[in-house]
Length: 354
Image (cartoon, rainbow, N blue to C red; front, side, top):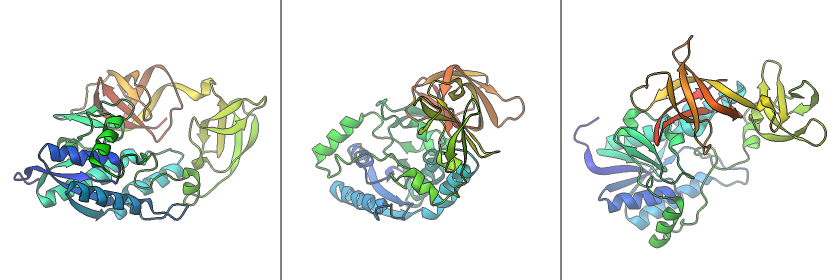
């Protein structure tokens, strides 16, 4: 990296949402020269014929004009499809439930912003994530309902070191309040919760168009066949899908057995839905790798309350971890991520294998 990068110049991911808009405003107040960058990573229309990327870009342009900051659109669709979306499809076909939002940050969003920052001579990059940075450490956002450190758990230490998270000290209501004060048109724009860059769609229909369907039996944890499924990739561990084993009791997905193409379901509190330990692959640490065993906190899905656990080295392979929880965990889902914390500090993460 060029040692002469401008310490008051920042490249901000301007997504067209209220969070990144207020991030831009706060950076301006702190005296930064802001370049807003809209990353165009998905151009397909949704099921209603609308291209959410086009709408978001128009919103981002209006924000840049309102705030008087420079604006740039960068096409990263090829990189997104190759590095993130292809991994999502491959994982689904292999029985996993991948998390494209976690992968998108280090492989696309933060990489693109860093590359642009180097090109324009900016020392910093910034996003509208609800998170904080303290030196080399990633901290949870002040708003515990919106904290997004979970999704940042696999960015590189180098990416973290040059990142600014201007809204990390704010709550969502405060962010919306600032947007209203500024007269921003998107002050009440809904937050997105769909696949990174693809937007909010019917996930099953979206995936069915891209992953081959292979119907098979649905059985209870006791082995009773109670129906047929449409294809294992279309189901997620822990989700309720209307299956019942008699008596009108709702059942939930407990296991996806790809070896015999069988979906196993169980009642809500059946022991087959719970685990006290898991194996995780590809540990990634944001700072120096901790000494193991490590007693810390962990969450296995976004917004799950932190769970006390112990992280142990795997005896057979160094790129595996064993995580033992103090209390049973519901719906441990292969392909998702276990994210580790010490207090407010996000240490890193590893992909759940089993």
